[in-house]
Image 1 (tube, rainbow, N blue to C red):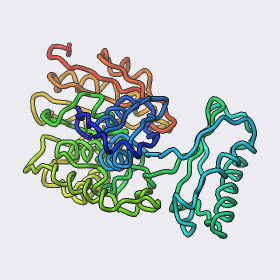
Image 2: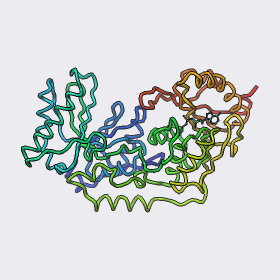
Image 3: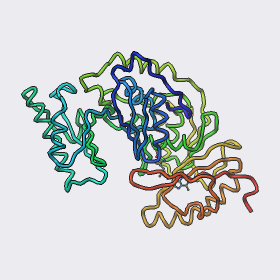
Image 4: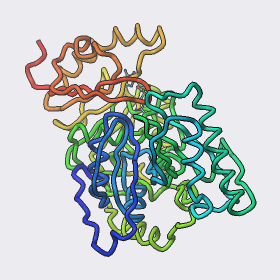
Amino acid sequence: MSDPKPARRVIRRNESAQLQHWFATCPRGLESLLAEDIAAAGGQEIVSTHGGVGFVGNKEVGYRLNLHSRIATRVLCRLASADFSSEQDIYRLAYDVAWSQCFDVSRSIRVYVTAVRSPFKSLEYITLKTKDAVCDRFRADVGRRPDVNTAAPDVRIHLFLADGKATLYVDTSGEPLWMRGQKIAKVAAPLKENLAAGILRLTGWTPAQPLLDPMCGSGTFLLEAAGMALGDAPGLARDMKDFGFTRLTDYDPALWKRLCMEAAEQRTMADRLAIWGSDNDDDAVARAQQNLAHAGLDDLIEIRHADLLDIDPPVTSGVLVTNPPYGERLGEAEALAAFYPKLGDALKQRFAGWTCWFLSADANLPKRIGLQPKRKIPLWNGNLECRLYGFDIVSGQHR
Ligand SMILES: C[S@@+](CC[C@H](N)C(=O)[O-])C[C@H]1O[C@@H](n2cnc3c(N)ncnc32)[C@H](O)[C@@H]1O
């Protein structure tokens, strides 16, 4: 699923008995890639919406997605859904779920509410109502209620409100899936791993092509690209306790073990990867190196300290992908305004033969660097609306 073109997996007839409805979330702009991952995991009836994709599948499909998708943020399993018009409807929806069959009362919980055009004044109150319903139902069924833990809950319960419909999900991912357990050293504005992986796929990069991130920060693009090149399942490096499904009553350790073993067998070996990183900040270079070493990739990828304006490409053609500083602070914005024309010149002079991709929130980036983009792809980095700009650099562009 992490491969650029994931293969579709077909659910066998005898597996379909326990089909469930799921919803997987992802950074906005990556829904079509997530739908590909879901199809590759064996999901059916796939429907994309803003920020996520609904589908049908059995538990194995849910586990596969948690293990293999580089794009998903969370994989949620649907428990109940109904039209609503009042707070009491929400309470009733949550009370009607047989929670004690879903997880043990000793597990701590947290309720998350997301709403599109909510008719309610306070979503905090709705969160409280939902939590009360879960606890009341537990008390009625087993005589005790679960504790609430907002910092590190065992079980995350999600309520979605949209178009007069309320849907309750239990979160099978737990910690968000972009937390791969790989990045131990962070920089100021790191990309989330699933956004970086999605960008790599949107550029059309394949592991057969050279890749360069000349503003690599903590090395997110490098780590994701290496994982894709080696056929690594991103969930394999995560701590088991980070997965929410391990705390649900229907957890099937044998199934999970089999999927992990199959995934480990698919991993390929390499002595060297055609992936390079650089950054003009010593601290960022050290952190990226630390992260690659932690992932066992430091022998495969070269990182060095260099200014993007000074570097020569490592080979004659390839894919450059990077996210420059956002320039949100004043000094940064001024420095960037001066930097971009120089960047355009450096690309035209030295990167003929390369396709260069920049993730930026700056709508004027193409004008500033003086190049016509061949692609402009809208993407969201959290709440920040961005574009992924793609430029083909051809020789003779520099006058
Ligand atoms: C937004 S951060 C990149 C974050 C990175 N993608 C990650 O996930 O950690 C931008 C990086 O560009 C680097 N940078 C800024 N100007 C540069 C230049 N002229 N040459 C090389 N790197 C530069 C900064 O040091 C910073 O690490």
